[in-house]
Amino acid sequence: MPLEFELCPGRVVGGDHPCFIIAEIGQNHQGDIEIAKKMIKMAKDCGADCAKFQKSELEDKFNRRALERPYTSKHSWGKTYGEHKRHLEFSHDQYEELQKYAEEVGIFFTASGMDEMAVEFLHELKVPFFKVGSGDTNNFPYLEKTAKKGRPMVVSSGMQSMATMRRVYKTVKEHNQNFAILQCTSAYPLEAEDVNLRVITEYQKEFPDIPIGYSGHESGVSITVAAVALGAKIIERHVTLDKTWKGSDHAASLEPSELAELVRSIRLVERALGNGVKRMLPCEKPCHDKLGKSVVAKVRIPKGTVLTADMLAVKVAEPMGVKAEEIFELVGKTVMENVEEDESVVPEEAKAWAKEAPSATARAPRQHPGHHQARHPPPGSPRRRQAHLGPDLRGDPRRAQGVPGERDPGCRHLHRARQEEDRHRHGCGVRAQAAGTHPVRLRRLKHPLHTRQT
Image 1 (tube, rainbow, N blue to C red):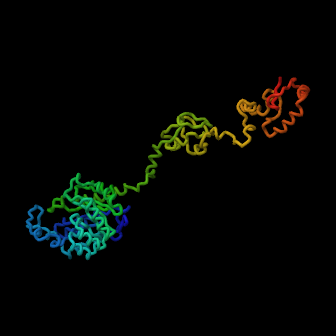
Image 2 (image 1 turned 45 degrees about the horizontal axis):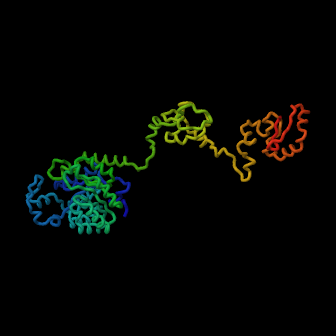
Image 3 (image 1 turned 90 degrees about the horizontal axis):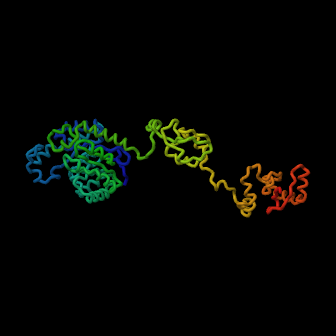
């Protein structure tokens, strides 16, 4: 079953589609068709999507005794309840007239079928969807017959339990895939503590594959707007031209200015809900450019320094530097240019810096099997001691002692140097003296090539 469906021709509900707003005229028309037309026009002018009425076939909805009982309420339009209801009921012809007028105005038209015969009439009238009032929500024969008509359904849930609503869902779903359930509390007017908006989220969990809405009878618009913020996709509110008129529903209804405010507020909230993707928006750029913080040098940082956290700070800086959240990514990098104290660490420079300072492992030359002794003498050996000399003194132990000598025997001339040493071992001191150097006397060292003056 889809989470969204076409409730009226060209008007989809659910998903990311705008909330569908039903102006429930009900029987607030006082039994006057001209007032009913004014209310249809008012609903359209205020931005509602649909004008809805309540249609009853009285003999099918009430038994004889219910119609004949005395009705002495201040809201009564007759001596008996039957007389009262007949005064407020439009004929089939009048419903056709109202439907035609709604089409001319440009607003969807429907009605709650308050009994099975009323549903049959509305089906013949070709209303876009059936509205099931709370009084028929647990009327399962009625639900089955209505669902089988194939038109989309909107089902209120006043006076019902969650267990009953699970049965309602299962019953309707078996015959009709396109329906929605509205959270509703059947009290007029409704007090805030009895609204129970959290049922909306519970319905969303219980019935995740259908749209959930809200039918409200409270005063004002704030609670209904909150329902939209919780995810209500269909809203129904009673409307009136004057709250002081006779009738029990007027006090819990919205006058034109309130309905217009409700529509504006709902559309505003829909815009405010967004898409749920958290990112910096274009509208935030001016504030970010003015107040956004970035990385600066806490102290002067010379070229070649490996950055540590205590060298860096975060401030509102000009120019804007590396983003504040990237400060720890700079730690361990080697600075390629001098950075003065309190100056921005600009991204262009930071990108060129080495990602890490050379580690001890990185500095060590590659090891080759079988060559450890030749290339890396153990600590304390003559060649290991040469490593601490400057580059001009490395290579020959005699040069380290101030005596001209040959290149490092560990280099590529090792073999040639050994041959030369063997050939001239005897008498080299004489040649050195003849060449004008100090007389030297040779003695053998542990290494056959290492000699020194004595």
